[in-house]
Length: 292
Ligand SMILES: Cc1cc2nc3c(=O)[nH]c(=O)nc-3n(C[C@H](O)[C@H](O)[C@H](O)COP(=O)(O)OP(=O)(O)OC[C@H]3O[C@@H](n4cnc5c(N)ncnc54)[C@H](O)[C@@H]3O)c2cc1C
Image (tube, rainbow, N blue to C red; front, side, top):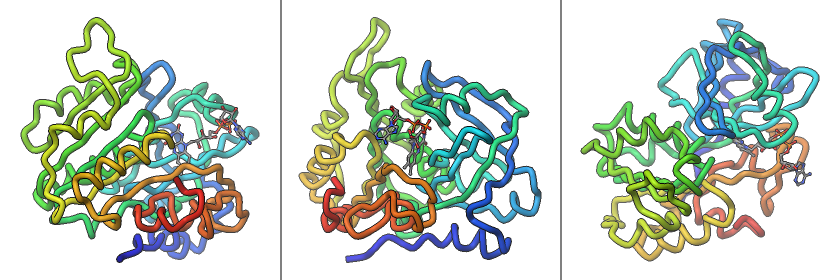
């Protein structure tokens, strides 16, 4: 059994810069896109060129976003690691920090710490089939992985993406994914709980999409991100398809503060979500008390 790879990118970025991981780097918002009534996609550019060049992340990692005078919140990086110079954050208006972020305009300055945590084991996944399952806002960290796979598509076998949302209006990156449905190099399927009059796709939970799915269990890695209730059921479907427990990866959201394993706010069993996760193999998660 393998453990997920360590949080190399975090240590590297700060070591290379000799920087203090508690100090936010000023970053300019370069564009804002309203994705749904509650979610916006922000593109940010770190102002200091030496920091911007040293900033490297892996899909599944997060940053601590700070709004000066308001506070900090952990947010997954949605853009691919191959996109250098900018990062994208898909943010739902949920509380203090995220609401303040939603009031920001292009050109405004915020703070960023990170990248933090362990992402998906991209190198280990290379050469295999990939099955990605996202529910709702869970697409935010998986989008980075999808984009990275897209950039290196020839390195992977069959890539299947299953997306679930409450309603068609709540599907994130809808325009982009509508086009992906017609691609031959990705099998992208969507389902909603509550359809509207224009919806011509599946209706039901994302687990329903597994019924007709053909998976090669010897050669497939799974990745899951979504609301907590989803994990147990999606893992069960993946296990029914005979995927190994150490080839299923889950990304956990826990309340976290420092992002660097010091403050102990984000304990999952005997580990911390901020440095040992947020991405864990299911085999690791099974051995963590109250992980799922
Ligand atoms: C690794 C990671 C990645 C994440 N990625 C994303 C992302 O890509 N996009 C995104 O939009 N969100 C993401 N989140 C979630 C985001 O960090 C939280 O929603 C965060 O709380 C938002 O901060 P806020 O100040 O806006 O909200 P808060 O003011 O913290 O409130 C958020 C919600 O939590 C409730 N709440 C506040 N304090 C508590 C408490 N002590 N106990 C229980 N409930 C409480 C509030 O009532 C409100 O409903 C991520 C979280 C983690 C851990």
